[in-house]
Length: 492
Image 1 (cartoon, helix red, strand yellow):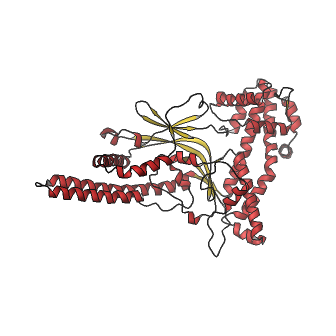
Image 2 (cartoon, helix red, strand yellow):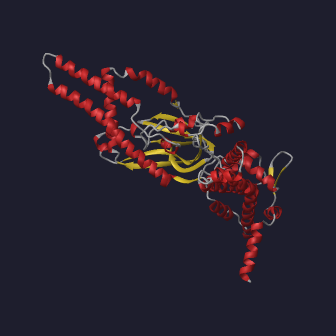
Image 3 (tube, one colour):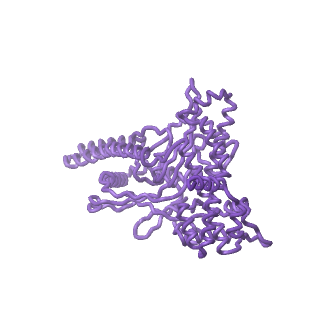
């Protein structure tokens, strides 16, 4: 994930995003679309039977693993887990082993669901801009446990872990776009005053006081590439950020509605544990699931947030404004002919800027409270057990779709190498559904081989058995027998 600035007639901020492995197509739509591409009605019926048997079989593969995951989580559920642990009469070391087993299962399910751990670079890019949240939000680290995840990553090391990985983990999956249209009058006025303030600092040369701080901040900001290499980036996605900060403001635009745009993380899952208090050891593990979170507002999903307040920079601006105002007023009074209008203008500017800083903070606080409420009711999908059930179903749906697409390509287009199969699957998804994804061909072929419905020839190309033979190899599933028995009972 990177940001890119293009200079056309106006500045554009574009974020480059890598394609993800998740297949963004509903399974029923996928099956019916592919079935309709098959000419013979008998083959179409066999294909629909094949799709059902693939899903039933894959569900059976994961059943035991998912049951273990849910049973382990019942011991670490923040609501009822403590009571169940007490009933088990387990030692502290035994509980440590169980919680590490739970995290191992959880991270495996996350990987199978195509969730990725957000890296420092991705978070820096996401937070490099502002969208609806304009307050500095930080985590109260004293309220978060620092041993659970630290122990897990010491036993299961991974690359590109974020700096906060010992306290909490943010998983992300999928990309979307959020647009908001409003007057944004207060925000526009704030921008105009901020630009006026910057102009006054340049005129009085006080901006040099902040130059050192600005240089430090620029070092921490993500790099912005001036050129886009279309060949290297042809498979990536580009999403433009449209922000007030980059707009030219006029009186007409000030009083008219404006649309701003921000890329979103389609799904976010946050995992953490609260810090233990002295009389009671905390064992609950929180797993929270969010949807459609704007990248620049990623802070709203952070756990145990501190109440925002005026930043040290705001207080510095207050002090500098007061000093500048007093110096300007005394200098004007010492002149032979003191101009009261000049003194009034200086005092008005200083008082106005201080008032602007305070009222902007109050407006941002109100917006923050609204965003937090919205994240609780609209953005939060589920938590705890509900999130895990959703993840388990996600794994099955993705696995089934990978098998169906890859088998369909081999059935319709014949033998293919791993690379050709990967390309053909991606082309099918693009042509038939208008969607792009980085198809996980390795995982798909592994499942096809496990089902014993594909083989390799002498030069390494993959080929599949016929549809009827594939259904025979997979065999009649338990679900089919249950459905048949139920239909027999109904007919009787």
